[in-house]
Image 1 (cartoon, helix red, strand yellow):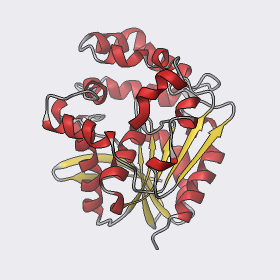
Image 2: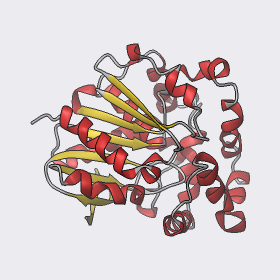
Image 3: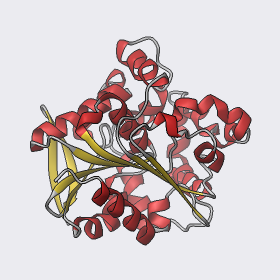
Length: 294
């Protein structure tokens, strides 16, 4: 595994990478960083893939953007820019948390360039309103969404007591897992950089933005869309972030006309790639092999 960088026009994003071959982009979420995939990149790369895990926009000082540039559509443009920078016509996407949301969106808007999608821990949110019926407790699971909408208070709450809320979210979302303390320390250190924490929270604050063109396109473009790339969804049956019924009841085959595979894991939660690394590596590798372009 090696460290490198990837560009979208003038913006440089740090990466960790492994292997050569067909490209696979690994997209991280919150509260996390790209090193969340470090332990699974090499075993996947050994099967003939070039695995690249960038730091997502806003998670390092060099890519901090104004809040209006942190909509889903803007993040899709990063994927396309990275592909252009490396000269990739097609790419596989593996996303966790927010990375999954962005991967789905790429499969909706640019399916011809996305060879396959693997989502870890997040369902397609198109039918999310049905969670009130299938998983009424989801509204309690999503309490943090309300907190994150409040500028200054959210930042103050997250920073308090050495980012204790970061520890809490990892434990709440993966109740059966003891998080890696060094990895959590790196996440907290990155949020100490000026502007980074607010940029990461802007992902959430822009979820319902109907005041800007990019915000409206990001929301309305997904409502009636389908994912045009073959997709597998891996989820923990004990996920404290997204209830299992969101994967088992509102994830519909009709929204994935080019194929949907879903697989739930016992005794695992939201950070599935940490909790069941060997199984996740096997499932990702098999999916990539099935959907190779060359």
